Amino acid sequence: MDPKHKRLLRSQRLFLAEDLIVEDMIIQYLYQEEILTESHLEDIRSVSSYREKTLKLLDILPTRCSLAFHHFIQSLEKDFPWIRDKLLGLCAEDKEPLPPSFTVQCGVPDHILPTVPTSQHLNRLAAHLSSEWKSVLLDLGLSLADLYRCCADHPLAVQSQVLAGLVMWTQRNGREATVRRLLQSLQAADIPPSDLQQVFV
Image (cartoon, rainbow, N blue to C red; front, side, top):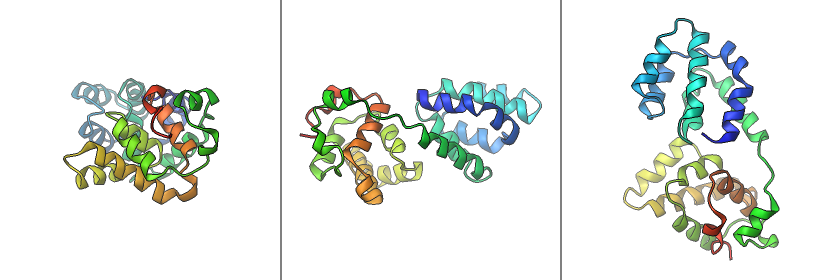
């Protein structure tokens, strides 16, 4: 899990323990998405109170993969939308400013940072991203349903899936879909700057 999301869950631990009821539907969804294992399900079900179940889940989530936070948020959508909205709002506030050194390492000229990426930029980026592409697009604000649609529309070509997601992001966000914002998500996904040096030239 991203360190930023770990910090958020830790800071909201008491709030979640009081307000969130971890019912079977939540843990079954997380099991379905391979965030929880059968052993995790047994651990959560072994405690009696809802508060203890929530705390047990909050102990497990930070140890799981980079998509754990996003699937957890998705599991709250139906029954706990106010908790979902609060966590997403706090997550947005926690965006760290992009260090100048990262843009320099990526070889991105300053005048390009506030502009919308061109189709050429997006094509090059799609060719450079691999397994981390879902984390990047989720950080940019796309939903899991959006990612599913990209995969369904282009089942045999990962590069086309990535490109479809990037285009979707630019179309939805207009002038706010800048190179600077894109670099923030690439940095959050730990993409090496050396992989991006030829993308925004």
